[in-house]
Length: 417
Image (tube, rainbow, N blue to C red; front, side):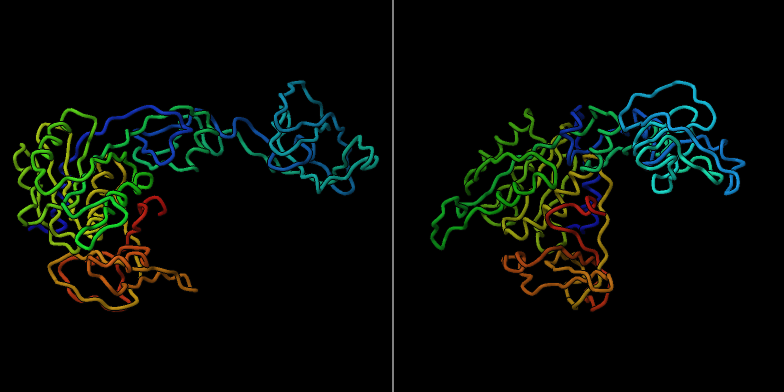
C-alpha cells in the first residue's frame, strides 16, 4: 500500500496523450486551450468616446478663461458605428459625439455633455461656449489601450469560460485550438448491481454509473456506459481492455471488484497486460482499494474504483479528475482554505476525504464543518455536504479553528478561484 502523495506522483508520471482539435469559439465553453491565444486586433479598434459629449482640439482652449471665452462651431453629430469623416477641421470647431463614436482626426479630447453651454440656446444650438482650458485626452478610449494586436489573451491550459468567449468574439477570433475531450468507458461490477427500480434486499441499485456520468460537463470527459460486469465476467472484461487498445476510448473506469475477495477480478485481469505504471491500494479513506494502470506503449489507462458509492465518488474526485487535469494541461487545483468548526480524529498514516459543509461568516471568514456519519456506506451526510475536506497523513487529531484544505465535489476549484 502506498501513500496518497506517492499515488499522485505516479499519476503525474503516467500521462497518456490527448490530441488537439480546432473548434469554433462559439463551442469552446469548458474546453481547454492547447496553446497560447493572442489577440488578432486592437481593442478598442480606434480612439473613441467614453462619454456622450463634444470633441474638440485641446490646443484651441490654451488661452481661454472666464474673461476670454470662445464659441466653437458645431459641425455634425458622430454616433457609434458611423464611418469616419476625414475632412480637415479648422480652429474652434467641434462635433457632437456619442459614447463609442470614433474620434475624428484633429480632435483629441471630449467635454461631457453635462458640462456643455450652448449658443444661442439648447433648443437651437449652433455653437458651444468654452470659457476654460480643457486638458488633452479627457474621456477618450484609446486604440489598443485594452489589448494590442498580438497581446497574450488566454494562456495555454485555461479552462475556457463565458468571459473568455466574450473576449474571443470581441477580438475577432473565430477558431481556436483546444484539447480533445477524453473518452471514458465505465463499467459497474458485481452480481448484486441492478438497474431495476424495485429491488430485493440482496440487490443494490446501480448508482455509481449515474454519478460518474453526471460529471461530464463540469469535469470535461465523454462518458460511455459499458454496462454491468457480473462476478464471472473476467474474460468479458479482458476482451473489453483488448478492444480499448484499438478504439477511441482513452480511459476505462470500473467500479467494484478491486478488493481482495473471491470475485474481485479487476486487478488480476489488468496484470495480464504489459503495464508501464501501476498501483493497487492507497492509504486513504474512503477508497483504499483503488487501482490505476497505464498500458505500456499505448495511450490508454485504467482506473479501478471501489464499489461503495461514497468511496467511488471520493476516488473519482481525488484520483480520476487530477489525472484528467494533467492530461489536458490544466494548472493543478489549489485547495480552498477554511477554518475547521469542529474537531476530528483519524488514523495517523491515512489521508482522509471527509464529507463536510462550508459557509461564510458575516465577517467574511470561510468555515467548514465535518459532518456526522463519515462511514462510507452513509449517503445522508453526502447529500448534506457541499465540499470535501482533505485531512493529510502524518497527523491524527485535527482541532477546532485549524486551517484545512477543501475541494468542491461537483466542479473543480480552479473554475472559481
